[in-house]
Image 1 (spheres, rainbow, N blue to C red):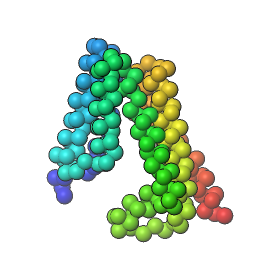
Image 2: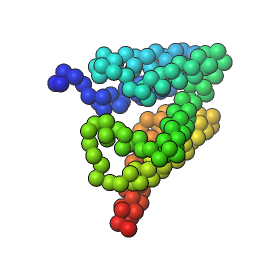
Image 3: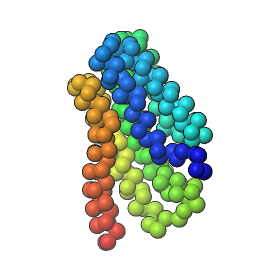
Length: 185
């Protein structure tokens, strides 16, 4: 286990395609930037496979999405397509969470049970949390879509990377307050 790198140590490599795209777009043409972003998306998959021995589902999804959107970018010579990846990812994740909730299923509880853990909280807690997270992901996806169209790539990159974590941290503060009040009732 000592030589095996944990999956959570690789969260920063998911930013590499976006960072490469931003850098290459500022120095070269859109096609070069898209190719660089797509190559680094492939490298991310390869690194996960080598070091973690498996490829996470969201990594596969984002890789396929970046290849498709990168291809459209190359054909149309328009970088907006590459930058729409976080919009589609947010909408899909939010939609999937809503789908699970509609079936009265909790993704978080499934994951906990998959690790052999029991939840000290009732399932309704997780369903509410996931409903709020679904809304966050859909709103974030739409926000990222508007940024792809309206602002410079450097601003888009900020919200694609560290900005997302700031937004998620603020969300979790409000969610903690809300859930605490709910649990105390």
